[in-house]
Image (cartoon, rainbow, N blue to C red; front, side):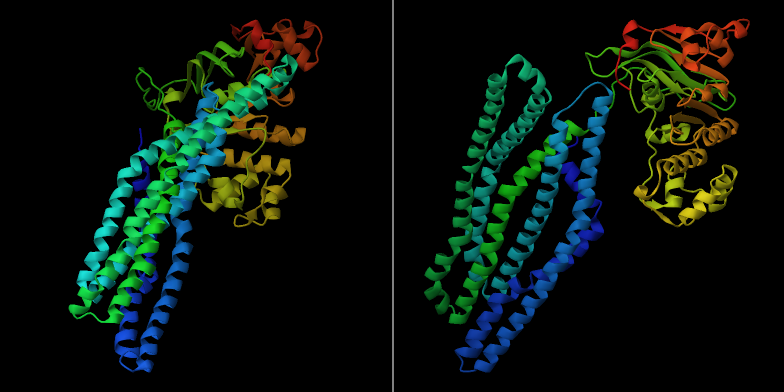
Length: 593
């Protein structure tokens, strides 16, 4: 498992340049902490006590200038913080969403993923930022104060450093207990989220069965458990108080008690006052910020991030089968092959596909038809690798989809769903993100060939910025279709991707993709798509029939009903070149898309 330390170190290493700039401005921020006591001592001993008030004011003026420099440093450190923190948050979101989607596709729903995405990721982001600033502030401020003390009087630095280190030691010794209690709090919070989702989603059944009191008590018990864990966590404030007392406050009476000895060593009153300034304005605030920050934010960061990594990183599927190699040129592997595929939405749902098999040769034009909700889009998702079957295998050009990397899949198939995806960015970025190296000339030629030159001109050309909300559904679909045309994939899957276009435009697009080198699979929005196909796959809830349009008219009453024909007398002599694969009766009853 990837550990918290590994992930944190990797995140920091990836932002080295930003951290170097952060350190540079932190030095500027720490300048007042390093000079405060020394300049105060000079102002008192060499200025006011020496009868030279103007010199004393000049020393204090230098301190004011250092404070201004420190304020600029503080401003710049906060400005740089987002450059370090936000990429880390984006990585966590990717982990959580990928893990949740992978689990859902495999039939493993995870209600706690909502709590991780909406609460825990933001908690980690905030505590990561706070922890970074706290540790950075302590290191630079405490170091600056100790450097100032050494320059003022080395014995005073020793008197301050020893109790500070003792206080830090007490805090470090208490950290394991703090982490354990923080982990209990996170787990209790996650369990409460899971219970709440279960109770809310089942509220109708609860009401019908009259189990309101029982469910209320069940949820209330988890609320009480979380409250108990939070109270135990609050008791760790005693440890924090002891650390601050020893490390931050003990140096003050120690320096005061040592004042006669320090004066005998030649230290002036101003130097003693400067030493106290270092303790009160440097060491104390730095230690207080570190202890409070680590105790409050650092523990939440470590425990919550550990939980996210354990729960959200999808495990690599265990498989004993050897990875299918890429086919060599000249082989005749089908463009698409399904063998014994079974898929259901959830472990207790009826199967959408049960032992399903299909071969689509290279260069084929296959249209999939069937009643609404029969499983056409599910089949498209399985072919594209968006969904994973519970049994059986799916191959694209001889490559097993379950074993292929995202880059391999992107190079072999492109799926355009019913709701076309267009993002805020330039026209060029929208059309070429599947093939970033594509020159503008190729885009222009393709748009002209496909009848989209006018649309691109109306949008403002390749460098125009698109706003998805400003485009019609049909415009978004045509941009997505052009993107698919320009992609390197040899298999194109159109899942009702032309539903917002008129029939003539739809026919033009399907004919264009049929002429494009490669293989075309169309989830039909209109039955007219079947008239343009080489083969038609009919899903009718009991059998899966593959044949030509004329062949299905002769063989299948369900297909004739879809087309709107009556008895097939006019096509009774048509050849039947397909095959059928039996499906369970439950297949006709499922309600998932």
